[in-house]
Amino acid sequence: MPKATPRNFHVPLPEALYERLRKEAEQSAEPATEIARRAIMEFLEKRRRDALYSAINGYARRHAGTRLDLDEELEAASLEHLGAGQDEVE
Image 1 (tube, one colour):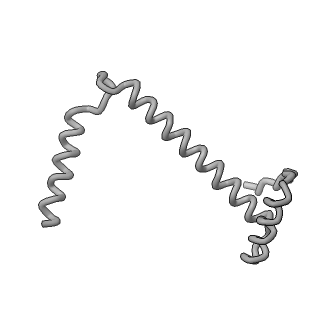
Image 2 (cartoon, one colour):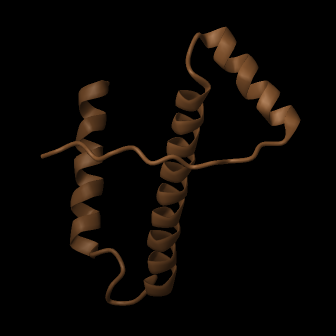
């Protein structure tokens, strides 16, 4: 599969942020573009995780106490399993 061609994206930065990025690039001996790329990727990944957590949390809250709530047999088996692990530690 051919590698995608990188796309350029112009991001105007306030002077203070530009200087911090330039200084970090100099200290780490990494290109500023690589630092910025990594920061953007980390930010977007965090946003994805936060959205997933929010969706799961919303679902759990909406369905708490309904038939879609945690299966009691599954919960009992889980607690049993966790209890079994306690015996091994002692």
